[in-house]
Figure 1 (tube, rainbow, N blue to C red):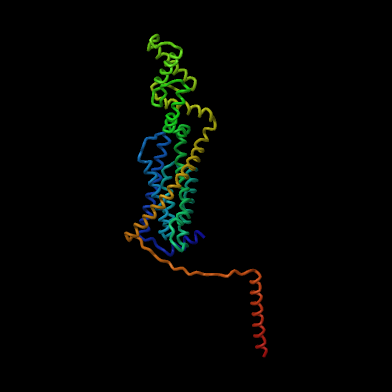
Figure 2: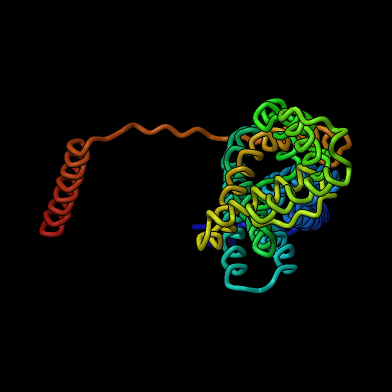
Length: 360
């Protein structure tokens, strides 16, 4: 049915300049959007969480790409042009990654999902008696966002596979925020009043040494600064050997704690660590699907205003369709059998009349 409609619709319509322009803009915007997403995910995998214009650009680009996909599904009547544009928009971003079996599988799945989404939207637009933008979006755009989530999850998988997946799963900003929130309980547990994420390791250990000396009622004047530095260095070496990390003393306390926690997590994972990129990609897919819920409604609103604007600019025009309503009366099996029997009797009577007339 799909290919029959594809051939029939293509033979009946030829792409006009407006459809060609919409298809070209759709391919360019979507390919650019997914390339920006790949660069953003590479920064996240490298644990670079500083603000970058890539992050808002990726979200804005996705909203525009989804909106253009919906508009292309609705207004491009040439099916070869429509489905070719969708396939090309999914193919171009994957040309920038290594050609592996996984890339081929993801390419096939994303193209099939995107084609299915566009086909459902176009099918709803063709057979719908009225124009309901929300109904058209609901028909195929969620499936299209699933294709986008799959493609971006594959980009995330490729990036974290080449980096420290445990470190990516424990982002530095989130870890620093947790340390600031639990700073007071940690101070009471360690007995060190200088606990802050931004202090250095040596400053924290030196404050701990002085607090321990005061607890033992040993005045600071009886111990020189050189002795305190030696005690601090011994404490640092003991911590480094206990947790198997390298501590120089001038690094921030938050970085040292995060490195220690990461090392412990890697030890606990052991041989299962190689499955972490897959788990991370699945978690990213689910998180991205959650993100697409507000993006869906934003794209719907953007499509509404774009259509209104194009109608006002006379790029598009309203068209009224007339539909003829057909009503049918349900017929039971018993009624159908009686109708068939009556028809057979009438045929036999006509044959008998013809035979009698010929005999006469």
